[in-house]
Length: 515
Ligand code: NG6
Ligand code: CA
Image (cartoon, rainbow, N blue to C red; front, side, top):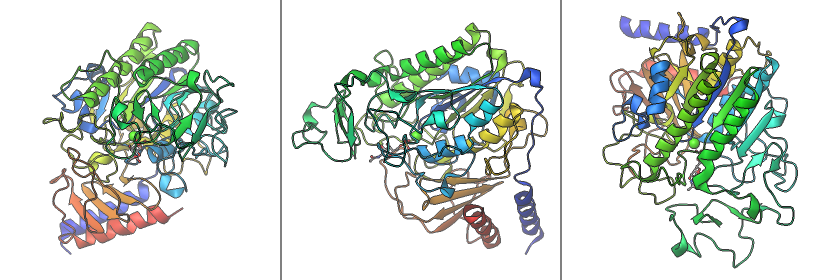
């Protein structure tokens, strides 16, 4: 073996053993900030102008980046929603637990009461905790959600003091809000029914009434029609509780503002989990047509507006210097995710994942490398960082910032990267990163320094070329890329570096099967 290679391998091995050692940022008890985590849905690395987008402008996100730290190597842990959100909240890789793939409409609660979460830990540290927006982590006991009764367990049983939710996704039924334990504005005389099969022969669907739809579907999404758009799954009733897609963003801002106002005098943690830019993309009328990219671009503008509104509220309440804001996304971008909204046709030269290949559903960099920004005015020196940080690390890192110890068995995969998040000296970030696509038997990316191993255990859709329709790309079981020379992951060098590949394979197996 040549010396450069052997020292590279020694460095890899050394990193492996120190990787979970904490590097807590010392934050004075008197200075402990409020914390807001803003998680976009399906927003790609290149979808924001501070990461190079030119087809549209995201002034509010850019301002946040200019006043804080813009991470070039910030990741979510999976390239789909449910596993990223599971890992963000619990600090554990989703592939360790069953039932953590994309949740169906009637999914029971996926995080069991008793499991420590970011919210329960910050609660212990004296924070009032709330979540507003998309949940998609299931509600209710084994039988699934009791839509007309008490929806528990849910966020309130795993550490949140309050919640105002889109219970599943905006493309999955039902289109109603959940406030704490109940569907908001539900008229008991018009009960809500949610199911996987058509409730009656004449129930109108995206197939039977396709001509009437205001936005046609391209794959899936042909169940019950609501607001002129057919969805995944079927439901009836609950008419007074139903929302209009166009109003969701306003609602998330309204409820977040209420939460911040009510808790302005005590430490708070807000998880702002807007639905943008997930399909069906149906932004408010005032944002429609604002970009040349169609509704996908307009939804990005709507999301940027939400960020601006939250920042305005912090300024109005004089909390900006008192609040750490973290902006992320739950997975990389996708253009056609099931509706004909013109995302591909109107995309032009826009690169939703920036220079990276792959997007949502893929373990290429574009699937999980996402916009990642931290801002704490007056406490965090503005700048840029190439430290590897991941949403899974927020559990340990935010707990450290809040001065909260983590019980021994909890948040086992969460690395305390608080120093990196706050731009403090020695803030190195993670030494290695596992990127998963969806469920337990999925595909994996494993990044360590400049090396990136791909392991394909599943033949599912991979979305390697974001600008085209989803498809399954034929790939070998393993590939190896040198991200320094080839950040686009175009040239598989597995055969050139068999020792590196063997080492990374062994480590990945240990991480995925270990514990
Ligand atoms: C897929 C849906 C997709 C989206 C995704 C979940 C079809 C054909 N595709 O199954 O549209 O809903 O699930 O997205 O139904 S996520 O961001 O919440 O993970
Ligand atoms: Ca998502």
